[in-house]
Length: 140
Image 1 (cartoon, helix red, strand yellow):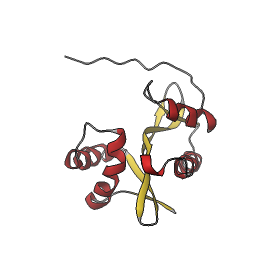
Image 2 (tube, one colour):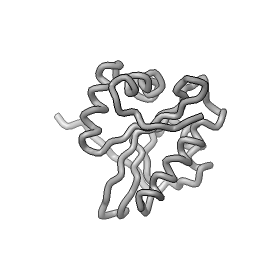
Image 3 (cartoon, rainbow, N blue to C red):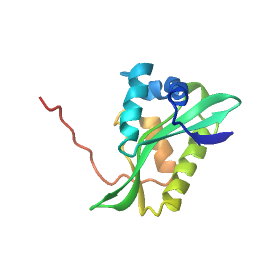
């Protein structure tokens, strides 16, 4: 098992089948282009590979916030459905937590859709707490 950063278009494309489970509104080309744009603003994409297959991916950024100080914010965290409950998500989450420590972050944050009950159970078991409601609206 290894965790690495996806940086080249080919590496990003390899991550898409897993990320596509979380972000089904994107196709592979859109995903690669979107990630490349976001990388210019500090987004990073890590992947966990085991036995030659990408099992989990995590998109994150390290930023400073008035509310939280320096924080690692997890935009995306998903394990392939066929690979869940095998420790891949936990290993990638622990890696993210270590990245936060190594980068001098005060906190780690993420948002999760209200319908993702299994993900919520995972996050709570990893020690995260629910601190806020996230509000959003479409801008027309």
